[in-house]
Length: 494
Figure (cartoon, helix red, strand yellow):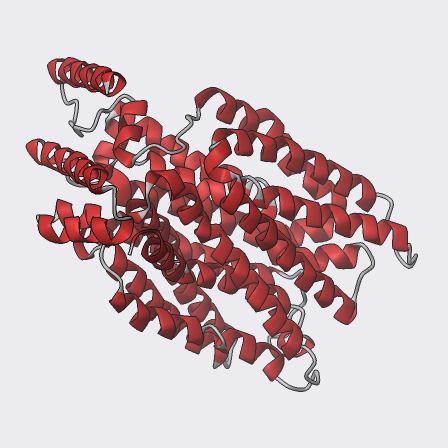
């Protein structure tokens, strides 16, 4: 089956990321519904709206951390399916909400589910992907997030055409979440578990069969055997020294550094400002003087731009240029675009319909989406899933996603509508300053290039070797370093 089966697995698992995008984007149109605002007796910039979005992100924090607890026990695939089941419940609660409490519980449940899937989908894709195309395969995560945003926007735009007296304006977009949930729950039954997970559980013959289904092209049998042997060597070495619990991620120096980088790439993604735009762009367009149905139309177009750029990037660029260069490129160019957006926003005058300012403001918000899709969007998921060693991949990714992505997202979800109402265009400078003084120097000096390396070769890159030993004393540290050097020299000779 080879590459096509591998690609279909990654796309189908990416339905979990579709829910990520849809559930995140659907509230953009829902909070623009006059019926929704009247039903809950609120306004677009109220703390209630911030709470509806932040509870989603807050639930995702705990969902991500839950993934770290269950993924190694029930597997990558079943973790994703568990998330889909929880999301189904949350979607029903939201669509049927009779009061704010019911809505908030539904948002927490869907957030919990999306958090669970957001950390498990990239791992599943990464462990199943061939090293030469892993950027493409894991980049599908961001592609499906973008596709989810697109669908949510146009479902919301179509529903908004209903009269303001109809709750269909917001109930139908929330109910639509049920469809991908059901597809995932049953569809993933036809795909295998990650070969690394199978080998780690002692199901070596099944793991080899899955590797062949994923990567065999009729003439690379030797490579598949080599890949199997390398995975098994890593797993066997893990069993020599057990590393239960969360503590080793923080106490083992080399693992701690990899955990920090995986977490920071998620933090930096949030500080690009992209999710603030995604959640509250209707408010930003209103600040530019774009209102009514025209506002929703611009939102719909915005959500199409990023996924198109992302698709081009993961298909033709990501696995060639690597990970570090796009992150540096995105940091610089997004900062410049936000400065331009702030400058344009400072020229807006209430009651004055200045088309030139409106078009310019929309252009730079669109440009941020494009630049994000050429950098942090796909690379953050790829890099996070790559740098984690097998021993802490589940818990490490859970921590990086839960804390680095969702906890920071929760903060911005809560404060952004208030900040946009109070600060307007000045709000953008917070992200600019962070990018200049923290994001760029951190990536430049500490991040590694991981393109086209197997996950076990990335262990070598970070000095761990493929042996997964826990350096609990000085003698074991020296032994690990000596084994890593030997492995590196052997690789060079080969």
